[in-house]
Amino acid sequence: SALTQPASVSGSPGQSITISCTGTSSDVGDYNLVSWYQQHPGKAPKLLIFEVNKRPSGVSNRFSGSKSGNTASVTISGLQAEDEADYYCCSYAGSSTLVFGGGTKLTVL
Amino acid sequence: EVQLVESGGGLVQPGRSLRLSCAASGFIFDDYAMHWVRQAPGKGLEWVSGISWKSDSIGYADSVKGRFTISRDNAKNSLYLQMNSLREEDTALYYCAKGSTIRGVRFYYGMDVWGQGTTVTVSS
Figure 1: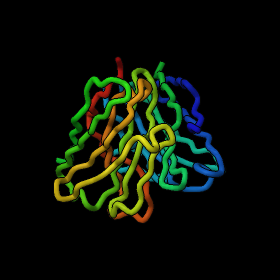
Figure 2: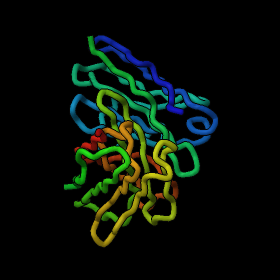
Figure 3: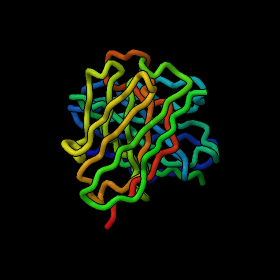
Figure 4: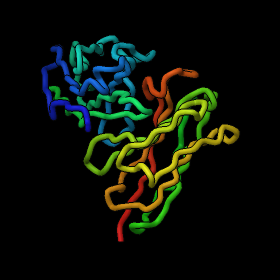
């Protein structure tokens, strides 16, 4: 089953927001192989976080990831207008399979 | 420049087949896992299939298992997805994505390069 994310979150410029991603002990809880993707309308997804809390080169340090038990989270600090997008988590689920979250629409007020 | 270019999408009738291709350039293709991810119109991302850099680990989503086959040709720097017995619910934009970790021990770490996608429409 898909990982559970809130359908939408919002925040004002400069604020911090956190998006959660809840799975099970067979995916998020069992592996430190959670990643986060940002997708702007009409664009391909972009990797923001991999292996729970690692940032690829070129990704702003305003993005940070964490995990506790079966729930992973991504925090965006110092919200900017350009952060408005859809965000997806993804986890390894064993047996060479992956599972995505349903996605969260971030609105910057 | 690291680049992935998908092709092979189109309009196909239910029950028919289609083969997607993904041409890779700008990196050592042999050294990275590769994945297919799809997105139905107005919907979220769905992982479809993946193959490790050594081709010793291959996985499929339950929704396509037994119908789709992933493969790679390292000599041609290409990834493929053979899609048989297509259903209307397979209609989506199909992305090819590159694994983020060189010669990773694990099947998956992240997907750091994505193509622009190729559209598959299954309809009678």
